[in-house]
Image (tube, rainbow, N blue to C red):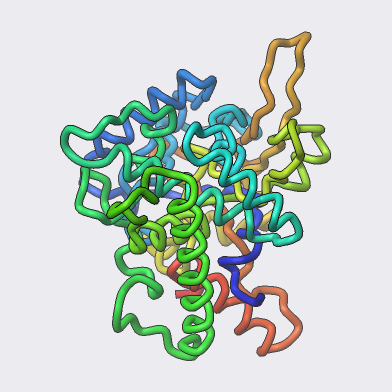
Length: 357
């Protein structure tokens, strides 16, 4: 299947820093749901350096970004994102309602690289439906994180940063990628149907007269595609196991709170970044990126397994600079135009924009 919605999400290798000084930071306030999510994140061992903060960003469709509140020292740790605070298909396996059906689905589709994405999307949609709206019981353990995502369903204060995504916005101009996006849209809708079927089989959504909401399932598929990381290789190398019972979850789709708020740079975003955009262009990418590792748990040091992110080696992030995440090359480095266009189309379908614009 050529659709990125049935394959691994792009593995984000780096974070890039550039300035928010050129009016990159938005004027809207941080939604209340994010405050709740940050408290939840801290309660699960998440650590965010006081040298950075989440704030509204005018880039990449709006939403939030991560900004420096003071100059960052080269290689300093700016965040520790514990795997205990991450959201994967393993969370669905532990859910009282969804768990049995999710485990059966992963067993049946063990060789399908996209199976974990369907189960994770089902988990997100399940938690959202149980916890959204006035008077809803937001008692699910993962409701604080799930409700901080851009669902675009009219509930809560979180801005819909996906509103202009070409797979969601009817009539969006996509140029040469229209045919490829049509294929990706079909793949996403197929995945959403699998999500709905899983929910109908395993949760209260499947009770009489209460079938799963397809649009909710479709948005959940889009959220998994655009906000998760493929950590399967570093997790395996670090000896981290997400499903100790049967090994059904490899970590191809991992949602890491806070980390998933970082935006990807584009030509227009760098152009609005003034001096920082110029500084970025003067440096090689290798020397400008913020590096990260998956750190195994260490019982002697009492440290949990976590994604640890460091400031850039040479590109110095200044106060007000936005930290950027590299989602993928979007065709850069391909040998020919056909391969470039295919990779660029996948990037556009997954994230909703092109970095070259």
